[in-house]
Length: 140
Length: 228
Image (cartoon, rainbow over all chains, first blue to last red):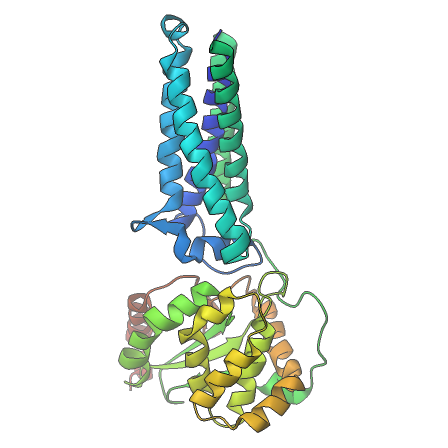
């Protein structure tokens, strides 16, 4: 069964929507970047919102699209018995999870502001990682 | 597999609908005056803000800003120097900065910063202090009370700190700051920075000096009498 890969595909799709929203916000397509009562503006305006000049949210979009692609391929009947999609999902989601933990710690201890969409993305990548881990343990 | 693809389609449609909805949503209206209100006198309400530039300038821009706001600081340090040199000093634009401290739940030291500037303004150092507060914006990233940082900045721009200390500790300009906040609310300000020309909102958020150059040029071109 490839149930865990299908679950990752659904979660990754949710992640794509959240990361795309944050990315569009960061480049000014969705609303002007301004200070309101929400923490998202503070987080997005901080120096940590960009990595190598590119909004961090864009890396999220790329990451979730990659996870989505792998999980879709791995869910195909011909690939169900293969172990590599699950391993790859585990490695990539693990890296994403660690990066997200780093970003969340910045919100807590450095920026002192919470972005609820960033937290939603953190919850999604955590769920993907846990699901991939469970699928990997079941395989082995 | 059919159920799986059906579920994916539902999530995809919901995601697209969400993105389209949020893209077309105006910024959520927020009241900057949330929390306790300071009493406002007629004198407080009459204060026009911190004015920079000639009264005869054909274009008059009013900016509602929050000193703790990182976007305001970015605008003040990156874009505003060009605006000052090319539009204000040349007499095309008069710039007025008005206080719009966001609620302390988001920006804890905004009111204190506004008061620090107001107390410097009574010694004729308003814009020097505004520049200092935005140029040394590290204080906004600290959780500790920035009063001592503001005192240092005030001293740096030539403010008598004994008088300034008494003014800040008394929160002397709370009413004036509140009046400015009320004015912003009345105009529909929902975040900072927000810019007005002749009472109409023309821009908000992270804007470039080029946009203000184009705005000023278009207003002057549309109203030849306004030409200097």
